Length: 134
Length: 134
DNA sequence: GACGTTCTACTACAAGTGTAGTAGCGTCCC
DNA sequence: GGGACGCTACTACACTTGTAGTAGAACGTC
Image (cartoon, rainbow over all chains, first blue to last red; front, side, top):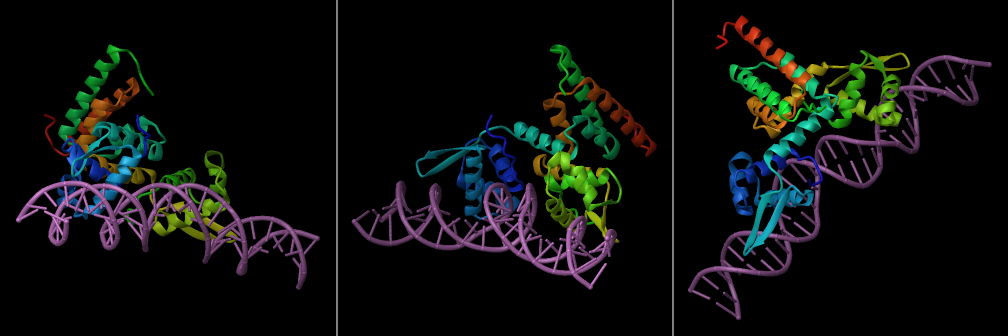
């Protein structure tokens, strides 16, 4: 697992662009970001370099330019970001987040449906290999 | 609603110290943070000032020193932080977060219990507002 | 009223972020 | 093989964050 340096706002956007299509050229990434951000080519390049330094993106020279590809998937990044929020704002306790969700946030019917599935799935998983992590 | 400038890691710790006890003197805040962080008095002062600038803390001179108190409660801060994470990492969609939780995170029995309560509560709430619970 | 003790205000400085410019190199085209 | 063009590498610069020091004001004490 690469050093879990957290992704900044702008970096998330770049990663999103990469997750949208496996190896992509710098040009492609810029193109994908154009509508969302309007960043200059060099801005995107800077961000890509920083991401490579951080180990979040792998680069490979390919003839003319380079091809970039994420070093981990979106779920992994999301898990890390969530953990980071948990530590920062919820005393690191998952339960606190759930409590907050239940008391403070408004849920739609679809959300509730999702939660029901979530419970069922969690139950299945935990009974399969009987463990309850913190 | 004060300008929702997001709280940084260190600022969260200071806010936590303030939420732990209504108006508190600078000295008190430092004291509460000592074990957790070991920060110098002036470090805490700097953070408090920044929080005042951001509108997250209100200050009031009181004889010798000042008394500080949070300008909003922890739930509000949590809601904002969550929103920010949502926008950054989950395409701004609450459902994406729930999906992530259901598929990616491991839940304990207590978590599941909490979720069940959450669903029930949401159902109650939404039926009160006259939406059919499917 | 001189002194020590506290606080506050201002300043500092390195790392990280957002955003981009410039120079130079490799490649493609005629 | 010389020019046009695209791409990478390096540099820039302001703002935020983490962490603190110093100088001076205010207050309590004898």
